[in-house]
Image (cartoon, rainbow, N blue to C red; front, side, top):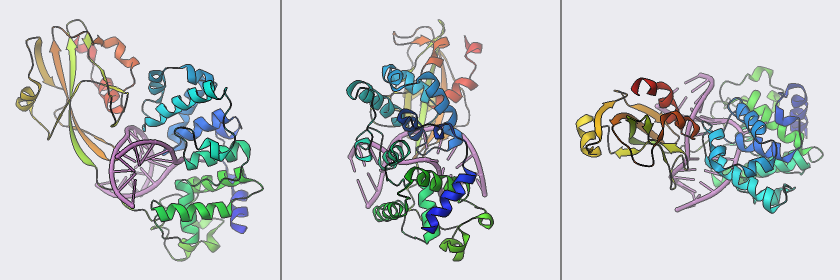
Length: 346
DNA sequence: AACTCGGGGCC
DNA sequence: GGCCCAGAGTT
């Protein structure tokens, strides 16, 4: 098929030199694919390098504790990926004797491995004919074929997967999968692609119909909800503070943060005092940021205040301020720690 | 089928 | 501000 041949030819000339392209080792391929989920190459690359340096094989990763894995993942987001990565490493090391599943169907059973990642590993490592469908593939196919079915609808997922399966080069599935994703990332970009140098321009339906700007079509998601966070940044006479581990189901599961009081709106000091209700050990309370820090997540906007609370004593669960950098924290907390000079306070 | 889960980069 | 990124899991 001409489309497929043009893509693989384009790829042979334009491919970027990326570290996970120089190996067929399923551990490295798997690790890179988990890191790159919903993450641009530029952002994921340093994390990939850090993980292979810290955990050269699946056994080192399996023998790490989860907190160390989360710490190395800190700042990358979607932390369930790190927890599933660690769980799957233990499964492979201890239940499968260190040997990765070698086909799409069995790869799909691994935690954190869905349709895309199973197809990627199966094709890159074992040359299985399994077509990948990621954000790049949706964009390239919807534009070239002029498909208006929303890519995040059930129907759309079916249509694009079937088309990708039909187009894949059965003689060289790995190269085809790499080629179409690279083409989407480098040439057929989301905004303002340079169509004048596109090798597929003659038969591209979106270009012909002036629809590059509207394809692919995606069903809009809801607007993020506003939440109001009040963090309690304790500073004791003994140079200690408190970090707590987030439990339960929500964001940042198993990461650490300062004790949190949530309010229904942004509050001032008098309202905070009512909410916090300090005891006799509290010597002084001040507000770190007069203007709320708005931390934007996909589905939540976190309007955040950091309250500095000087105390004479803290409970058993406190830790030395000099130690807090060892805990995995959300970037919101990390940014505060960098900006707030604890040394001036103690 | 809709919702949840991060953080960075681009326009 | 809105959209996107080598998506997966849960409800």
